[in-house]
Length: 239
Image (cartoon, rainbow, N blue to C red; front, side, top):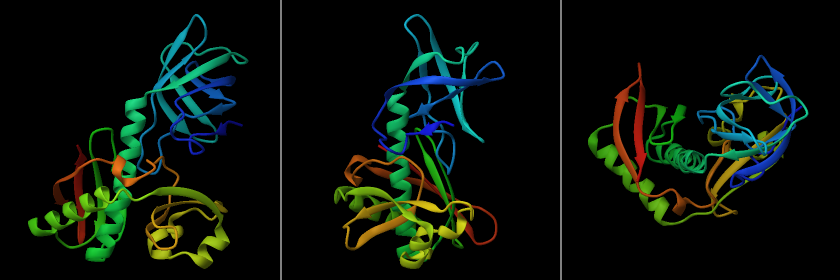
């Protein structure tokens, strides 16, 4: 079983691992990995696996019953020791966008009582869906200004795990969205932004994040679209 290390240290971009098994001809299962698999609105990492004389491009990472690294060409043999190298620019972009999405969710809840219903981020843009009838141009300007104020405040970002029963008993269910997690998940990873005693946002999340909001950079809200009855999509980019 692969030891998933990508949430232990999101800044770790190089590691060594052993090939446990190969599925088909191109799906590599390692004994440990820092590659992030697609999930929770965050895309997978890309990069390479290599030995002294061969390099395999990691095109995709999927989490099924195990974490599979889809490589170009025939995979390395089981038992091979490989060095994993993660595309730093892509990982960094996902970290910035994911933390920005948390800020956006909190701003929408505070300013408009609009609960997040979905999100998708990429390396160069992102969008968030929420339960709200219709934003106008003034609303979008308010959202953008609030986001950039929070970035300028350079709030700390931290994460930790809690027993699910403890989390449900002590945390704000509306913000943490614990109800969206399968009952089988009994340990919850919590991401907090802001002061420890009174955080601006506290959310259950298994994604990678920057360590402070100042690392996000300027946020530009690029528009909105209607997503069915009483739902809006907000699009944004980071500069």
